[in-house]
Length: 360
Picture (tube, rainbow, N blue to C red):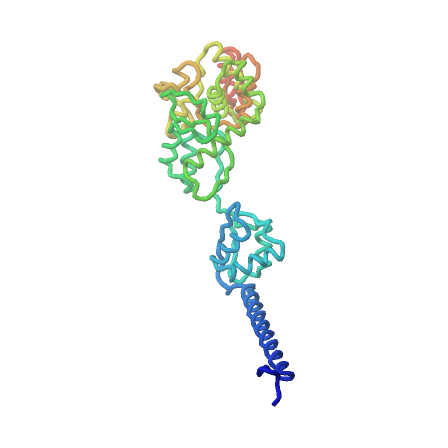
């Protein structure tokens, strides 16, 4: 009888069993490896093509969190595989936050490159320009016509006692019931760009903050105001008068000088622009009856400065109010030759003569 004692297979039989076991294990390993390879291959394949989507990568998200988000949005097939693909490629550390346009079906390398480069979707914005010398009402009318604001809400918010973020300039506005519009003169005339959907509050805050930025360009502002015993509110009021009275830049400081001369005399300012400010629609020419209107803004009937600015002054007018020309003039009249220049006078008699000359 052949075989090993105890019935154990011997020789060729044992070899066949061993070979069978080895082949079985190899087959299992190959099948497993093939399954894993297929799983990885399938996971790395681009997702089924689809429409472009906007995907928001939040600041502080880890590469693994980004992978999970991309899978939820259907941009990639398998977040688990993509995570280890990122580790293998040493990618993910430079992903930038923002909103991206990504589509199912994009190659992984294309996705990585886009997230690394920060090729985000540009936010929809609103853009508008506020001309120099516009009043609050004119600003509200313009933005309302452009479909950017609700006029009534804009005016209501502009007249509120809000702190308007961190803006410093508005903190100098006195609690004076005579002020017609609280933010008059504090909305800097410029071109603005804000996110689409910005509220009236957002727009007002942005504009008063711009006033702060422009005032910061005047390094001697606080020192000069202190030397004169003058508030920022008063300075902006003078600047707004200059803005509404002057067209030619070279004359801004001269007109500011006249205003300060009359205030020091003291003489009433008698500035037409303050009366125009009280009218719903400015007139090309004011009549005697217009000058009789009862209002603290009417500088024909009230002493000193009006309670506040009458327009949004430019930086040039603010600089003129801060550094007026030192002259002896108390009067000026606009020339009627289309130049928008003025004739200046020291005495009233000279002024009357200039009026005649301005007609020529």
